[in-house]
Image (cartoon, rainbow, N blue to C red):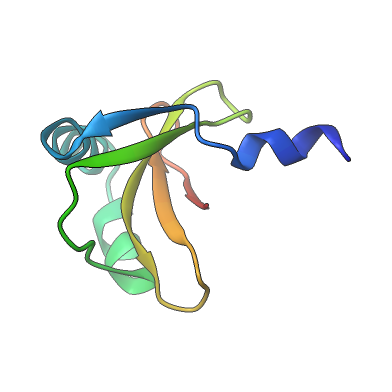
Length: 87
């Protein structure tokens, strides 16, 4: 097993309100990210809690923002660097 396999495991969880606030803040802080997110994902269904993930690239936290259009995965946004990742 390689060392980067652990990066796909959940780091923690957050409530729907915490997730929505984090995603809104990330989108506001990174110009053009909202358009990229809309192009590569579909909206989430309702949930009480969502997983967060550690972003090894910059040390930030990845927050679930939608379902990937092309793959069976969720799209997550990094609160530090604004990059997207599939989980």
